[in-house]
Image (tube, rainbow, N blue to C red; front, side, top):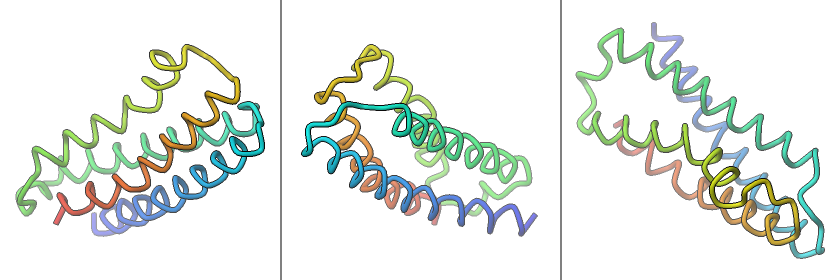
Amino acid sequence: MNFVFVLHQVLTNMALLYFLILGVWGMFRAVRGREVDSSYMGALVVAQVLLMVNILLGGALWLDGRAAVMSRFDVHVLYGAFVLIFLPFVYVALLRGDDTNRAQWVWGFVNLFMFFLIPRFFQTAL
């Protein structure tokens, strides 16, 4: 189960860097006046799948009893629930499928927000 723990940490670091890349790419596209296209939306889907796999690994660690060594397990689970619904919420409720330049700005800021939030997720796991 130690492999799953290491994989969970590696995927967290990967998500951190991935959201940085998505945020910078989104802001670059927004500044240039571009709309959200299929390549950017595909990258967002990959980000959501990455987060879902990481949550499943976290659930496997919880079933193994790793939650007992965490000081703020309840907050860590709350953050996991947040990342599970945040990107779909932005797409469905906030943007309602909008793909204009305004939406590109929103996605750029949302991804940078996630980049700055992931270290907090990591801190609650210590």
